[in-house]
Length: 302
Figure 1 (cartoon, rainbow, N blue to C red):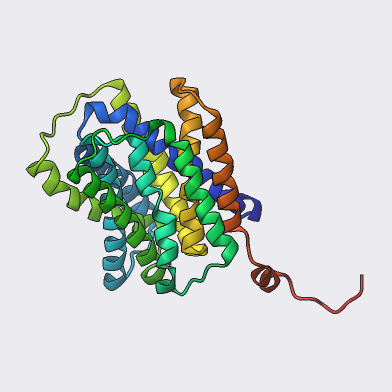
Figure 2 (figure 1 turned 180 degrees about the vertical axis):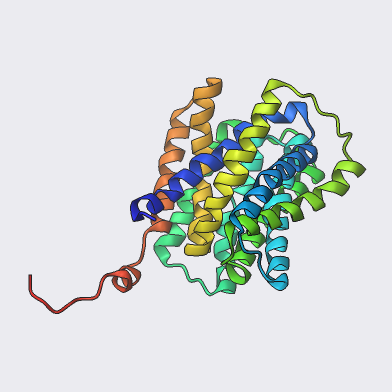
């Protein structure tokens, strides 16, 4: 694969991942959160399984499959279900984004569990990124709808995506993306089932907006963005990968400006710059790492 194309993976991931909040805005009025997610996971499986059979993709060993399933339960059902349910319970999207935006900081604090160490400038980058997220969502920040349940759901989402990222990085970073993703979606779907049939009404209004949101969430996010996320987790440091999520709120704000004519203020722009600088600091390779990655000298004079 071209190094230039691989270098663009973080950009593609941020752009696709950021559309998740746009999809929620289109789809949530017409289906309950776990019902929507269950449909999303099942449709993704319906696409993946025939491809796996046709391409004869290898399945992991049973012990590795269980680890992949656990990571999927946290990253897919835990994170997405928690955020969507919290917003459905009345929490504003801005507050939910700010709470989940704590993930890079939380991941950094726990990075020693997977033998990662941060340099001082990376801690500065994490702080700038969090500040930027706060500025971007400031206009939409409200305690309206803040209850013990909505706060608990958003905190659960934060814990799930943090634990899922660290667990996958440590215990199952290498697996075939096709079969591994299918296992994760199967695990997530099984977790959604009790909530869908025990709590929700399963009522769905099949509007054009819902069908479009569902199609995009399956093709662009569940297959495109998730594949990219797994590649980034496999090849990069967990803290660096999660720092990319800082870019989601400002990217979503720009998309909302284009699609919904939502205003972009000076504070939003300042937050975007702070976030971009923070992510750059976290992603910047150290001199030692750059030296190690440099091609060996041949000893010949040019």
